[in-house]
Length: 165
Image (cartoon, rainbow, N blue to C red):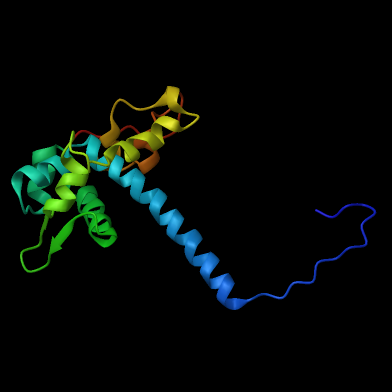
């Protein structure tokens, strides 16, 4: 926005290295925000705890153990593996947690347990009063979104009803 009586004009010379660094940082921050939301879902659905307790699991076995949709869980696990939050073992098509991942993601009470950060993002939203009582909604099947998992669908919403598993 320019001031009405301003004769000052900014000449832009873009430093490509600085532009790339800033773009990379913003994309990293966006990825981090999504990782926090995905971490919240993993905590609230018990997926991290089930991986900790059961060891390496296929996505189908884990979906049955956590009572979530297998296809959605497969996508969630793949995103978590890509982010380094869970391990993927391609030779057996199983997912697991390293001892360090299990401690930080599923060992409540341990000083290194960091799920409080994931849980604080939905709580800090302006929509806190509309929070869902079903945080695993995004893993329950078609029609659910990550944000539906963090926040309840307001009355009268056009979001389709979740089908039972």
